[in-house]
Every structure is written in C-alpha cells, then in structure tokens.
Length: 283
Image 1: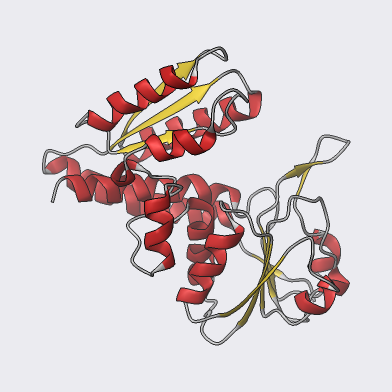
Image 2: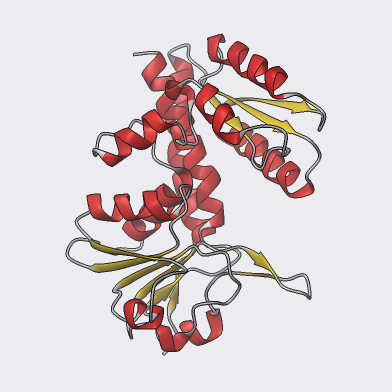
C-alpha cells in the first residue's frame, strides 16, 4: 500500500490564510509587519527565492522591500545597509539571501542583523534561545516540518526520530525541535557507520543531506513517516529530493513529495517569524 502524501502546498496555504488574518488584525490596529530582503549578486536561484518571498508577503498583506546589490558590493557596504535596516521602524524582519559572494563573510553578516529582526533565526542569540527551549523565532525549514507533522496528525511524543544531516540551517535545529516535542532523537551524518541500520529504527525520518535519492525504501522502517527536505536537480532537469520517492513510498505510511512538500512551508514560516517580530516590536 502506497504511503499517504503529506501535501505541503495545502498545509502552507492553510497556514498562510491564518497568518493573513493575524496581519489584517494587526493592520487594523495601525501596525503593518515589514520584511526587508537583501540580495547580493545575480544568482538565478537566489533571485527566484527572493521573488517568491516578496510575492508571499504581498499575499498575506505584509510590507516587503527587496534591496538588490551588485556582486561587487563590499562587505562594509553590505554591513552599512544592514545597520540602516536595523534602525528602521517600518522593518520588523531582515533577511540576507544566501549564498553571498565569496569576498563577504556570511558569519559577519548574520551577526550584523539585530536578533529581534533575525527572521531566519540564524543569529547566535536566536540559536542559543532555541537551544535552551525559549525561542523568539524558529528556523524556517525545521519549523515548517513541525507544522506539517502536527497538521498531518503525527504525534512526536515518544517516537524514535532520526535526522539525516547536521547543518546549522536544518539538521541541528530540526533535532532540537523534535526533542522539544518529546521525541527521542538521533542525528546521523556522513561519518555515521551503517546508516541504514539507524534509519530503519526511525518512526519519523527527516532527511536533509543534499544527495539525490540517497535514502531508499530498504533503509526505511515499515510504517515510518518520512520527511524529505532535499532539493536536487537531476541531469534531465527534474527536481528530486534526498529520498528515492518511488521505493520509499512503498514502505512508509506518510511521505513528503519533492517538489510540493517541505519547500512551500519554508517561506510560510518566514512570514510567521516576521509576524512574530512585529508583535515583539509593537507590544
């Protein structure tokens, strides 16, 4: 029996409708949440992401501003732009689209964004608050996964949860959120011996390793819930995840497709964080 698909597009649409209602209520009180997105250079994928974020803000009634800077922008020039955005009362959230040109330090840029405007939740202040279980903002992709699980009726409490991948953006915060939801969490990575033996113990398997079709059906526990965070492009141009969907869907009980799974939730949670930032600024 094929696994049930977890429809990220539908869940994202439902969540954005809820956000739009909250934005409307906030605007009725005289406050319009505002997001500034800064992009440096002309990376085509980054430009698509930025356009999608700008469009999503408009759809829920938020103010959105895109600041496009040339590839040759210096680190100091970018930091100056961020310093000005930090002080603007009409901007509640600031996001710098990654990756940045090699001559600019991502670490310095992340540190330069005021923590209360860090809607990506990358600043060490916010990662620290997540670690101690008292976050202001949740990292967008892991937060989106948690919403998908909740809205799909998946209870994390007491489940064996395995996260494949240990990045600061997905793997590590994903493990913390599952732990906070009372899951028993194992984090795997490229140095994990006999990875399949570990993944086959997972009731909930979250894969964010960046390798196309890496997790196959024989690596999955029958009846497991499989969340595929990967986004890879095959030689034929088609998008695929980190999980081999065909074989995995024959074993799992529920699975996210790629595209149409986790992806739509990431921008949705960015909107949620911008709303939270506005609420913090206008208590």
